[in-house]
Length: 469
Image (cartoon, rainbow, N blue to C red):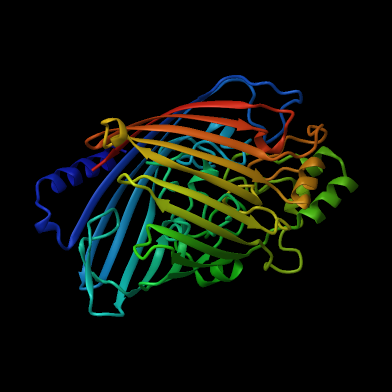
């Protein structure tokens, strides 16, 4: 850890010691984000299940720091490297709410700070026109002139959400809204490891009248697990589990300040059928068929894979190629003041097979926006608000009511006296921006956590400190 922080300190010193001109082939950025959240005790008419949010009060702290290094190798060729360290945990081991309130935490079992390689990829731009425009220096983007119409090929390790479902208003939990169902489309179960990264190939076509994206990437062999048992992802890992994503963005105004995005995705993995798993639970009501073996949050528990044995034993039956298909529709529009925007986002998946990597949501509708502090003489501040309504399929609901556990939710057999209800979330946030630091008090109100009206509502109070250089 001491070596890591020394590296970060030296990198920041290097950045501050040179002008932008001297970095025309190199880009350095660094971010560090700390989120402290607390929920007081809340009412529950049913006992705790194996994946329930604890109704006693909880206080958890998470931290994540990332070094962004970009190097332009040739005229339109870049390589980006992002070492990252993350630690801390979410409420109840990041379980108990489908729209979990902290997007900077992961279900990794251990809260100890861990250093890992978040991203390592090559980006190649292919011109489609001689007309050029300036692309400014940003995280993982070296400042340079790029064609206004172009093809961009990205290959290596990155997150699908780096490229797809890029809702400007509500996307980055390090700087925007924190809730999982607001930072990305809730029903979008995209290929990744438990931290959200994977090995993938993406192709992006930028035209003046549309933007089209395609990506194929390796999925984890087990839900909420790793994409490879070894240090390097292999072709066999891809054959065992992978996913494809297609996205079309259409401008409603020529500058894309008002636009629509349509995303379609499909996954191929070992996921089991909710209907078959529910039948297994009804036929065998024993605890051995329902309860998760070992720790309910441990990434490395290879005996349980974080779900009920009734589900686990059905995975891969008849071959590995099962999984979800679904879509996302995303509309966003800039308003009058600088950086003010509104958005509406709807997502859906078929809900026949188990949620695999992101979270247990099969349908979601979100909307909101943000208001600039310029309206009250705080031009760098921002007020953000988001609303999410999450739901699950009939098969998914039947599995939970039969006592089944997914990798993030499940209140247990007999603990859904009112059936399955939609999960509702409202998040309010204020961003106080000071130079390289942003402090963000955050409040979330959660109704029917994990789709159970016998529990909650839950009030979540948080404070995020974000540093960026």
